[in-house]
Length: 133
Image (cartoon, rainbow, N blue to C red; front, side, top):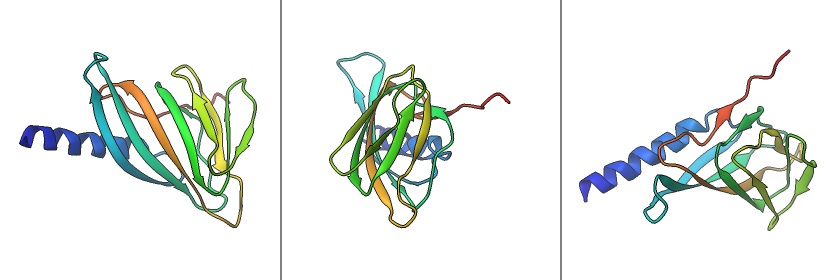
């Protein structure tokens, strides 16, 4: 039981540190190994963007599902359409996508969304992309 608790706490800490490049407040909610899918796990977080906040270009190397809880956010992956999402709307990123746009659509109101990752066990949930000059 102690080992399970320690593993869960370590997973939550890894999730929090892996999203340090995100412009918002990240709250880890859950990490769960998918025992029937070898080597895979789910990580669930919330992200809160302050008014006007934005992310740098990054990728997740996972199946990534976004669900907007409050406010509105602008999202885009490379070669995909730019979309503005409000409460109840969703966004998907494949493991091969590069997240080129992610920001709060408002300069005056905060935004909050939930992110659900299906990824390789123990891998980071976010990898910054250094843009070529």
